[in-house]
Amino acid sequence: MHVLITTDTVGGVWTYTQELVKALLGRGNKVTLVSFGKLPKPVQISWAESFHELDYRPTDYRLEWMEVAQRDIEESRSYLEMVVREVQPDILHLNQYCYSNVAPGVPRIVVAHSDVVSWWVAVHGHEPDESPWICWYRETVTHGLDHADVVVAPSQWMLDQVRTYYTRPRAAQVIYNGRDPDLFASCELKENIVVTAGRLWDEGKRMSLLLKCEQAVPIYVAGSLEHPHRIDSGSEKSASRNVHFMGEQTQEQMQQLLSRSAIYAATSCYEPFGLAPLEAALSGCALVANDIPTFREIWEDAAVYFQRNEPDDLAAVIRKLAEDEALQRRCGSRAYQRARERYTAEKMVDQYEALYENVMSLARVA
Image (cartoon, rainbow, N blue to C red; front, side, top):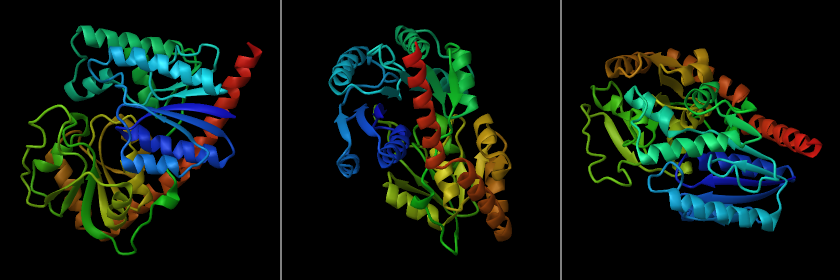
């Protein structure tokens, strides 16, 4: 089977793509990978080059959620059509909404990883005001969903957002994201510290909740502090001397940090799935999670929840876990077991391969 996959190099979709591509190639499939957003970093290029059989086509066309992206989207559609004509894949696996009208004769799935409107509602409590760009964006997403053979979402919650704010796809399926457990390990003696990861400037990550109260144990914040388009980001100060900003970390650095950390704080108010909490769970961390529908769906009783968006309750839950080593271990074990049972890369790719076969079979009958 030859799969053409689109991805981006600026967010968690890249990590998801790495797991997918590695497994598909390992199972004897052919993969053409086209990336958008920014030209890849050296570490991303190095990863792609480690698979000599991978046909990787990097570009720096803007993504559909970036403002002033219309012209880039038109040009990148033409580019993608050219690649499809050249390589003639059996199926398109599109991780953006805007390309589902490319090469109409080829079966395609569209994966709804996130979107601007549901993010805005989660962060601001209401839909964004109409503007020329937001109207263009909503039309682009709706058109993309309507032209997919199947729409995939990484959680039922995310699929519900698609149906609420855009359209009801003709066919849809939830496939939970997965990670390779062998990439993660847990130190025998965990340190009584908390780690969290994400973009500090992204209001949807709500990492500022950790900064508003004095914390009982050291907090390590991994991720970008500066917004790529603003100069005033990263300026929020912490009320706790126990909060330490680590900056961006490589995957290897994050794996080491998670392996020695007892607790992971999943503070997001907007999270269609959440790869970082999964990585923490596979590292044996106890999960402290914002009480939002996605985390309840994904983790059920394998996480300890704090009152939604309440920094005082977050600090209290962290303090309780920090003071009870036995509770830490039990919570870490529950999270680890759930992650191993439900959210592995193998399970994810099994479902995608089955979906590819089903979509291609239906296309042949039609």
